[in-house]
Image (cartoon, rainbow, N blue to C red; front, side, top):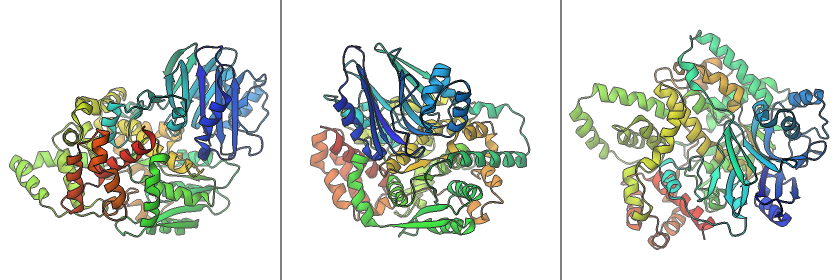
Length: 630
């Protein structure tokens, strides 16, 4: 696992500064504290920071081919590198290391741009072809590893994190208003935009070439859920058995390492499945890591301990205290060089920090909700259908909203009033908008009150990216369309960046076997009725694990890695909130209406409304702006 960066100038006689590449790489030292490496020659400069996992002694980057005409820097892991090394060796290629990175240069020589289709892993890379004076950058199929790029100063500038590009001298820093609107609603900025105008994210399953100042972008993979709509279904037991085999193979591949590997165990179905198969495959007890909350409504640690006891793992547990949060939150603006409104970045960061004291690599259960229809929003969509069909209009439009408006406010984890208010707010609007409004933060009407007039865009601009993904999905069924959008938006824009930043800030590599593309391809052709059966989420996954996990774990519903944000905002974080969201500060920045923000804050402090998501989204933006904007 590493971090990468680089610059390629359009003019072939314009040399890149080695000091610039080193400065860019030093911005991501946390991603690779073991070694720094650089290739600087004429108009190109490549930088790498390495966290050594495979071939600890000889895998220093950049890596080159036999005649040093092809160079690469690489962030990630290739799980099929041994098979590819063997195949390429048989074709006459000579390897000088035992690292997975070297596979890239030889595969590029052998297959050209199609070499990406042969890779199984999580990765972002930059490859320089000296003969053609051509740069190729690429990203894994799902988007597990990040890669940003910008065209500026007659150059292509790229890096694993935004902060590498911002290191380029004189790079302009201005907020992209479409991205700001998207962030406020989604709680993240969907690909391909970033919050900085002029900097883009390379989409998952895509590659990009830069040659003589010309940029070419192409897609080499996409998930196809439409296949599941036109196949003859097999017996459920057959699907369950096949799924278990494919999942077991994904876990086996991703356990390959030259350093110890652990598992992040929440006690939910997904992470428990990974832990169970690791325990089955490992000759030694697996090290498992979980986090405990003082607040019982947020605490899942008893489930993690139950799974650990059942699997006989070597279990470690961290207690999350308000003091740990109070110390971490002010630093999030630097850790997240693009704001993220998901408060679970806090336990993810602290658990990664804790885990890194024991292992260098950990497997996690991310991706299960998107693959197997695990989110409660999908259940809620079905409940809305019953709600609209069975209840008379006067009850739906007058009585129930009147009752909901008078519910007592609770700051507990996903409290009843919190769920009911969001449910009612989502009815009567298109399914795709409703889905993301339930998952996200500010609704369109709320943004009209929040944003100053000069920042407001047309309503369609917020959810346009979701409708575009809906069209690309090729699926006809609404559930499949939502699952596709979850893969392209919530997973790639929120979950994966959160895990990447939290883990790599602590020099911990986190792998996600549920997102190995062989498993993703297999699950994609399953009928969605095996994923969401009635109101039962992850039905087929639960069936496949019946002999591996306790029944109480398999019966568990989705809870999520949530934080007591509502309580902490008015508790230990109150001084920070009042400073960052002060009227004077907001008025000086000019993005938000100070009076509206103060109303949100006062209603929350007085317990009149639970505005945890809105206030946290604003706080993360202001911490980001304080760190990165001039």
